[in-house]
Image 1 (cartoon, rainbow, N blue to C red):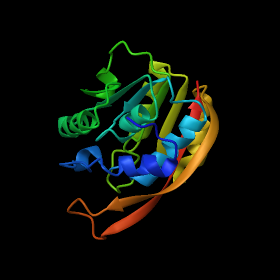
Image 2: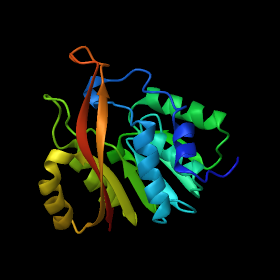
Image 3: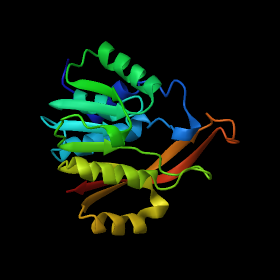
Image 4: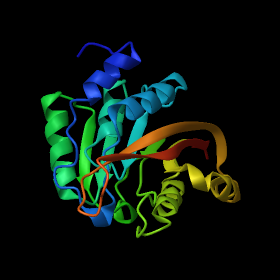
Length: 209
């Protein structure tokens, strides 16, 4: 496969990954847009966090960060998600792309115990954009990532919780090096949505352990 040398080319590749086939409201499943995923992956690549590294995508959904990392030269890339519909689709996409450095596993992140020494973890967990969402799921992901002991963590959160998150990361001995800010589009995919699309301010935190 031809090496990707421009962020726009990465974005175009990621655009071909379909959205969640059967989004489940209880899992707060929203597909990360290719423009956001490609920007974060490109930045991570530029910082030396992807090429020849072992990548773990927690709560991977349809696998955009696992696949994107594989396309950018990861040594190995694993996506983990509790939703088998998402994992099935992610596996199909990686198969069509003939990526031999990516694998997908159906598992709750807390039960994922495979012997895999991740250098870099990506995660876009449920971050509580819904009024009735189960709050604190993103912190559960951060704590699990700490247990897996990677070198670097990239994690999405609601921008409105930034002040709390900075303290939380510091209290857990995580060193924040970068904050990436995005407007995350929430499409009308669930019955309770009354707008075709709304935008939520989110941050992606890069932290070292």
